[in-house]
Image: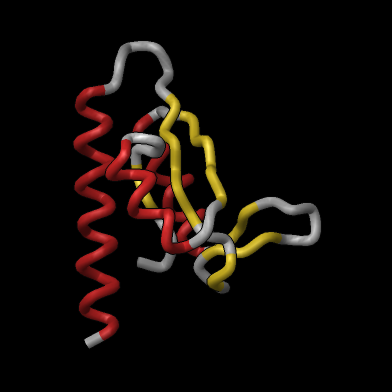
Length: 96
């Protein structure tokens, strides 16, 4: 059941990304990504304080296809969805 929820969440995230892409300007857009880098292997901080993990690799590949830049915002997990709802971030990717 958890796997189905994760797949559904991933599909929802991808839909949000592509919806954002259709509204992007001709200039290279910046996609603000809310995450909580405390959930390995999906996202965590490496020894250089870079956010790494499966979710991060996934959103980087999506951004590459969309030709947008990423700006990661590391925050408490409880704030991730609220950041998207408030418009502070464009998308959430955090082991959802």
